[in-house]
Picture 1 (spheres, helix red, strand yellow):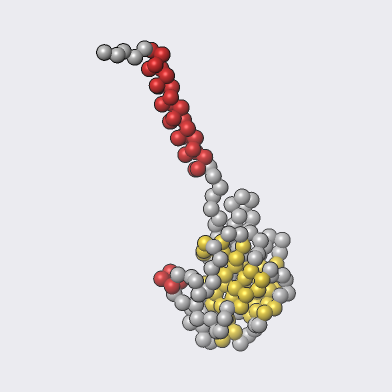
Picture 2 (cartoon, one colour):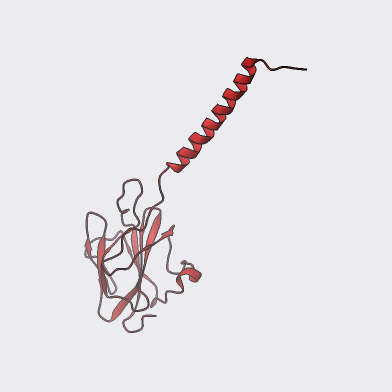
Length: 166
C-alpha cells in the first residue's frame, strides 16, 4: 500500500488551486472584455434604431424580422457623407462633431427606412408605414471602446413616392 506524503498531498492541492485560479482568471477576463456596440438613442422623430450586424442592405434584412422594404427603384446610398450632400431627392442637412446627421427629402417623396453604417455594424431606422420627409440626430451604433458613435461610412435611404409608403 502506498501512502502519500504530506508534501505530495500539498502539491496536489496546490495544483488544483492553481487550476481553479486560472479558470477563474480566464472567466473574469472574458466577462471584463469589451461590450458589444449598442444602437444608441432614438432620432428626433422618436424612431429607435436597431443595430444589425455587418454591412446590411434593405434587401439583406431578414424578412421574418423586418418584412420587406419596397423602395422605389434602388435604395439611395451616400458614401462618406458630408453636410450638404445630395443624392436624388435626399439631402444631408447637418453632420456634427458627434457623427450625428439630419436629412430631408423632396416633398414628392418619403423615406421609409434608413441604414446608417459605421464601425463593424449598422443602425436601421424604420419609418413604416407612413414614411417621413425629414429627421434629425440619426447616427451609427455606439463604439463600446469610447462611448461615442462610430464614424459614418455610408447611409442608405429607402425612398418611396409620398402617399405610397407601404
